[in-house]
Length: 273
Image 1: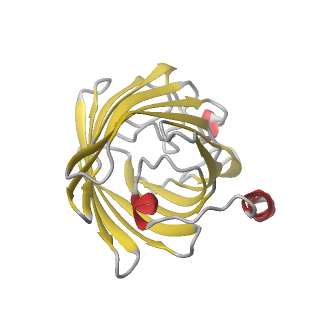
Image 2: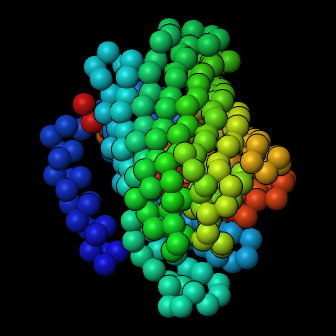
């Protein structure tokens, strides 16, 4: 089922993107808050402290308006969960996760300056389309407003500091500090999600290699559990054609008490007009 679905999605994306592909530059590819229209394909693996894990294939579409001030996005993950324990035959299941819708608005943008180059306001909404009892969703609506800066400190070195607050409409199946990620280790609703998160990614664009390297410190304060969490993320990416790039991202738990321990993500992005 997973293989058939992936082939179908790749076929559709190839057909619709072929006449629309647009040549990209390195900075477009490495920008985590890029306003360029694109299609992304993510393969992700999540590992939890008691060996529960799930794997995700997540196609996403982002549409940037021509004035580069607004960006709309949508993604729907296909998940395969592996539970450690007796779940009455539901230890290994496959199905759709929670639908995520994104919006970015840029009130300030000044290109090629040393200092703050862009200010973006973001708002993510996650719909409970995944079955939370099987660990594929959080079981309630999630909301995540925030602000993202693009701060150039040298020609090839950029910072993208980010401040966001995530909250849920009701009790959720999500471990504190996991940024609203479903909790397959204990697929029951607990507290409401109330997370303040700060990300401090630094990106080095390597022109000779046509790629980039990012180091990102992630801090989360869970108000529902009154606990702090710290993660470290590394991202290595490369432009692989005139119209596409690929990257590998690893996120590791450093401090706190999260159920989520390690995330490995592979991404391919196709840029379009």
